[in-house]
Amino acid sequence: MADELLLEGAVEPSRNRHLFGHGEAEAYLAQSYRSGKGHHALLLEGAAGIGKATLAFRFANHVLHFPHPADAPDQLITPDHASPLTRQIIAGASHDLLHLKRPVDSKSGKLKTAITVEEVRRAGHFLSQTSGTGNWRIVIVDAADDLNRNAANAILKILEEPPKNAMFLLISHAPGRLLPTIRSRCLPLRLRPLAAVDLKAALGALGLSARGQDEERMAALANGSVAEALKLVNYGGLEIIDAYDAVLKGTSAEARLVMHKLADTVSKRENETVFDFLLGHVDGDIKVRARGAAFAGNLSLAERLAGLSSEIAADVAEADAYNLDRRQLALDLLSRLRTALEPSGADA
Image (cartoon, rainbow, N blue to C red):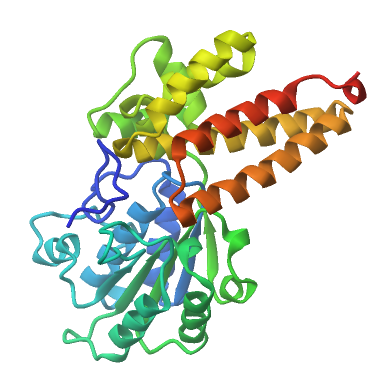
């Protein structure tokens, strides 16, 4: 079954042969492993879509090809799709690698909202078995942010007393949300967003590029994330942002018309990625505006926007939990944001 989180135009991290912009991290991992002093648990931190999972699989592939650190080269090898071991990793059939992620709900057929404790127990069983090859046993947690509390506590117990030749590669988009005790058991490796040249190269490797002015605009809006760039180009993200701006800048009548069209578009059943993109853009824009207002001394506006951000987050969580009407949710949050941005006496 294909990964439901895989964006159109993307390549699964397990089969991706290309990684751009993280040469220093690759060199560190290769040399640390070769020294025989590598940490048993690594926390790969950074924004979503910049290559953390691809790096994790790349490193796992390297380790499993060279189970004795002293024999490993000082640079990570590029995954060779002709290698039987690499093909097993891609197929999810490796006996020495477990990819821990949100499971699919057997009733709805959709991904669950969290990595459950049952999944972590699978990891415990996996690590308790002796490797048939005498190799490392590697668990990639993708993403550790998705662990619910019971699952997080269960993974913590394993991290506290790891089996011999066990290695954890935890991926996190927001490490501050993880249990401090989990972070303390891991060696953090921070990955930066891709520079414009690396983002362009990554998109080129996917056979994708924006043209003309859209290329510069896309690079600026993507914030160094290949995933965000794919949403902008392949999912109409640029058009969504244009419509969003029109809602906030237009007259009441103009805004109402665009608002309804935008809500109709993002709430379609097949547009879940687009809906999530809008929510993410709204959240980021509100926070930027709140910071700007605070720095400008407009504390009333900053407070209104901060409160609205918290309210929207709660409403989105409730809508997800109860499968509420997304169209109405989109209309409501856009209307409330327009209202919040209207000058009040305290803003004067």
